[in-house]
Image (cartoon, one colour):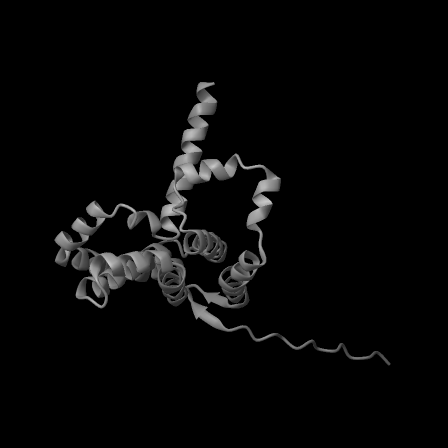
Length: 216
């Protein structure tokens, strides 16, 4: 007699829509990896204040629009995980050492020898990366993302992005003078928006390094 094959139980993975995951990732990036930014913003704008509250709404709306924009099938998880890892590492340096991750800082890091870079791999850094980088990344890996059919997803995402951008523009316009004055007087504020500022600085460094290599 042939024995019947033993059915292996399927692991039930939570299912989440790509739009909802985009909003959750945006919330995580804005409010859990930007301690330095919010500390500076609270000092410059006052806390609590209407301007600070509207800044939170505007920044969350902008990040959400960007996350929804890149929530393309097969690219959503890798892209979100990359953002979270970059944000976690950047937050560690900004929150602990008060470092602004600009082009010069990235250039110095790229020229740092391996033995010198090893001094940054402390127990605190590893624990921070596990809590703020590995854990949320693992949660993204475990969930199953529900993507809509292409044309339906395109229409819904487009409407959602336009609504989020409308909120961002409305909030920015309502407090244009306050935000413009804060950014003009405190240029370090925009330089600590995580992970946007570190990514922009890395791109600028890569472009400059490529130009120097081409010129030589």
